Length: 99
Image (cartoon, rainbow, N blue to C red; front, top):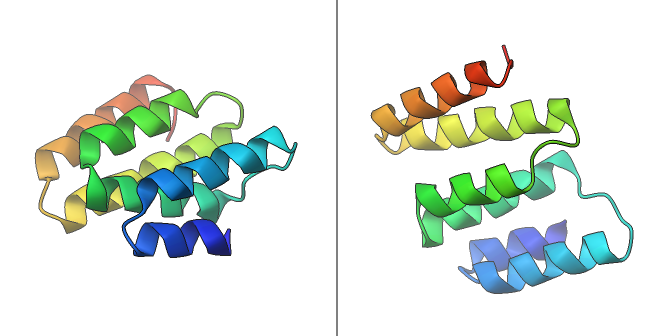
């Protein structure tokens, strides 16, 4: 987790993503905050569309994790003034049955 966070903070999202994949390949379960760090990195480096794609790609196995990640991305959108994107994510989240 700390290595992934550091890579994201340094703007090295590709390195962070490789570490993330390696973690999963070794059978380890990423922490909730690990996903948050990756989402933060994607938003900073590549924008909300890439972060959303990552969220969609890695959702479906853990509803609590999915809800946490959606909420985190919505907060990031709102914080950066992307209010329409945040509203769209909220609609998507509700359509998937999240509160």
